[in-house]
Every structure is written in C-alpha cells, then in structure tokens.
Length: 228
Image (cartoon, rainbow, N blue to C red; front, top):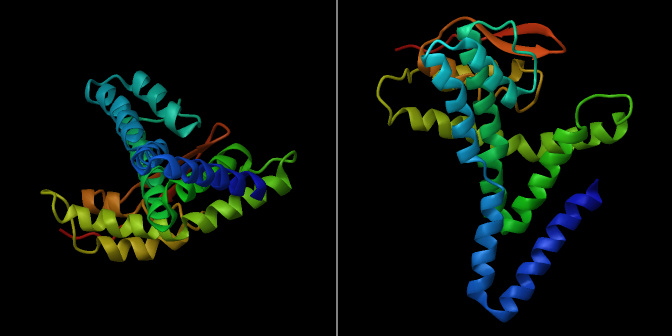
C-alpha cells in the first residue's frame, strides 16, 4: 500500500522535475493540470443538482436513483426529506476528500503530494471497507485515510462555518459549537466534522442523519445547537 502511495508521489515528482529542466512554464502547466485532476468540486455540484432537480419537481423515484449514485447504498425506502438529507450529508462529507484535502496537501507539497493523497483516498474507497478478504489491507488503508483527513476535515468545518456568515438566511450562532459537540459522536473520526454545521445553519434543529447499509436504515441525531 505504501508502495502505491510513495510510487504515485515519486512518478509525479519525477515527471515535473524532468519537465522543469526542459521548460519551467511547461512544468507549471502540467502541475496545474495534475492538481485539477485531484479536485471534485464540479462533480459534487452536479451530483447534488441531479438529486435536487427531481426533488423540486416532486419526482421522488428519480431523486432516489440519483442519490443512489452518490451514496452507493439502498435508497428505495427514503421519503423526500430523507433524500434531501442524504444528498446534503454526502456532499458535506465528500467536500473533505474532493476539495479541502487535495488543496491542503497541494499547499504542503504541490501536485505530487495531492496525488499521493488521492492514492490514499482511492485505496480506502476500494478496500477500506470491512470484508474478510481485505481485512488487514483494508484496515491499513482506512487508518491511513483517517490520518490524512484529520486536519482537512476540521479545516472544512471551520471553512463552512465561516462561509455562512456571507450568506443570507442562514443560522450562524451556535453552529461552530454544534460541530464541536456533535462531530466526536460520529463513528468516523473525520466524517462528523463537515456534517453538523449544515442542519444547524439551515435551521433543521432536529431529525436524523440518514445512513443506509445492506438494505437497512439507521439514524443519528442532527445537531441541535443552532440559534437564529
């Protein structure tokens, strides 16, 4: 696993080093392109809109199908509010590994380090889930991904909280406190950090976070500390 991560970094660094010796501008352009491949802002926006549009038209079936494309779980039994919550949760959590973390590692080590992070994240997505076949390898990938996302997840929470101060109609007071209170209760060491600020700032105030696995449905409380 470490060979994959280190190899990804090494190949990217070597390529840019060779290009820089030929033409620094060419190396800079290639590095920008490589960095762009690690970001998923457009994909997250399109995925969220694919759920929102049919919901606004009252087409719940189509919205469930669109949600299933981004959560990879059973969505057949969800009603419209639960579909919306599922989309919000997915976008919030994927903001970390699709935007914040790649930018964070790019600031530390350029495109090569951002690509190395994406290698870690991809390994976690492929084998990080518990299964008898990949138990040991998957556990290592998941732990490495947890460590890599530790700082970016918390930076995402701070950035999202700061962003709502520039947007009208959002609840601001108590949002940061809600995040610090609710995030440690999440089963994932990082998954809870980008989530609580959204229901708090949107004034949901109660309800459940939707998690669907293997055809079953479980829930966790939304954050409840936001005040207008």
